[in-house]
Image (tube, rainbow, N blue to C red):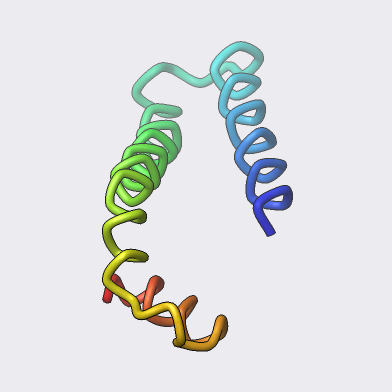
Length: 75
């Protein structure tokens, strides 16, 4: 799963760079999609900071599928 997310992230940033460099759009026209990507990266980075704390609060005997659901919910 991580590999797929990394690949998707790489493709999105490459697309944003191509949009900026090779389109006839003004900065105002391409800024909203790029700002959306920046926001998503910020949110992902913030989540990664808290992930160890979230995981530590989940008892080790909880099954993997249930652990993933608890992590998704932010336990």
